Length: 389
Image (cartoon, rainbow, N blue to C red):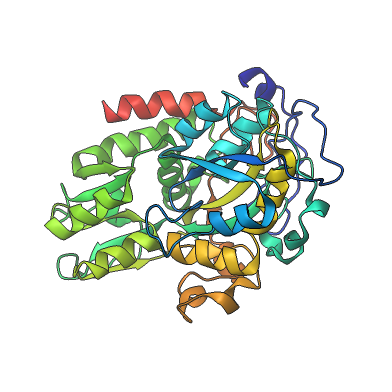
C-alpha cells in the first residue's frame, strides 16, 4: 500500500463538499467491475461496524438481515469489528464479501486491491443517495466509485452542563482546557484523532498553513503531535467503545470530550445532564461506505445487499438504531422518531460542509501540494502509539 500511495498523483476535484480538497489521488490496482447482477450465490459474509448489520440476535425487534435472506436466498454471516485498523486487517484475509468502511480505512482497502470498484447502475437505490456523499475522496478514486454511501455524522463536543461553565463552543475545551476540566477530558482512541488536533490548529494557528487536517507535512504534523502530547495530562480516558464514554460521563470521571450524537443520546438517557454541540471550528466526522471484496465469490449477493441496506426503509432503520444521518434522501419518511432526521441533520449540505470526513492520510498530500511529502497513515499510527505510551 505504501508504494501505491506514495506514487499518487494530485488531480482530484471537489465533488460536493467544501471540505473535499483537490489532490491525493493515486492509481489503484486495476480490477474488473461487475457488469450485471445475476442469481444470488446463496451466501454473504459481512464485515461491519456494530449496529450496521443487525440480525435480531441483539434485539429481536432489530433485524434487517432476515428480510434480506428471505428475499434473496443469500444466507448472511456477520463479523463485527471495533476499529478501522481491525477492519483493514480482517478484509485482507479475503474471507469477507462486503464491508462497511469508514474513510480512515477505505483508501487503504482500495490501494491494496482488497476492494473493487462498484457499478452503481446495478444498485437502483443509489440514485436516491444524497449527492454530497457521492464520489468523494474517501469513497472514490479519479471519479470511480468504490462503494455505496449509507450513513454519516460528526464528531461532536459533549459536555456536562452542570460542571462545564460557561458552555463551550470551541474545541479549546479539550485542547486548551480550563483547570476545572483538566483530568476529565475524553478523546477518541485512534490515530485518526490526530486530525482533530490538526483541525484545531488549522483555525487557531493559521501560520502553520494547514488546509486539510488529513494532509500534514513534517512541521504541521509535529505541531499536531505536540498539541496531543500537551492534551494527554487532561485526558481521563481514550475511548473506542462508545459505552465506555457513556459510563465515564455517568460516573463523573469525564465531563467534556469528543462524542457522537448517539453517545449524547445514550448519555442523556442515563440521566446525565449533557449537551453535544458542533464547535465553531467545525469537526471531523465519518461517512461510511459499503464496499465489495475483490476476492468475493458472492458478488451477486453483495450487490443485492447494497440495494437492500440503502433502501429507504432499511436505511432509516439502520440510521435510527446506530445514531446517524441516513444516506438515502427518502429514508426520513420511514424513521420511527419523526425528529430523527432533524436531530442528525439529514440532507443538510451546509451542515455537512462543516465536517472533515475521516480520510486515510497518504504521502501524496490530499490538499493538492506537490512540493512536499505528507505524513501517511503508518506515520500517524506510529505517532499515536507513542502518544498513548
